[in-house]
Length: 86
Image 1 (cartoon, rainbow, N blue to C red):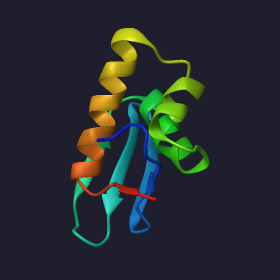
Image 2 (spheres, one colour; image 1 turned 90 degrees about the vertical axis):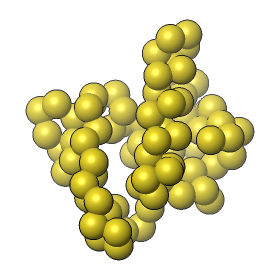
Image 3 (spheres, one colour; image 1 turned 90 degrees about the horizontal axis):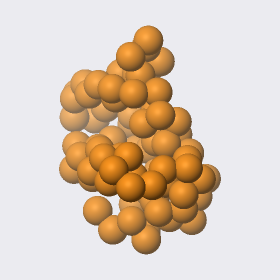
Image 4 (cartoon, helix red, strand yellow; image 1 turned 180 degrees about the vertical axis):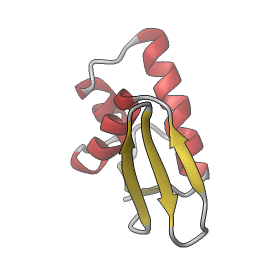
């Protein structure tokens, strides 16, 4: 995942809040994914409003190990087609 590119939630993905974070369901490929932290859910929802994934990570106040973990999670969501490049 290129953090300097802009991304957004895929148009066919619905996010349902849960106590642990959220469930993301892709209506196109029928995949169900667990977003295991509320911080990740907030980041995913904020991506579409930011000029890049790096800007969304910055806005979330993430640095160091937390930033690396969230960037890896975003990469996984991109590969799962939960996120799309804008």
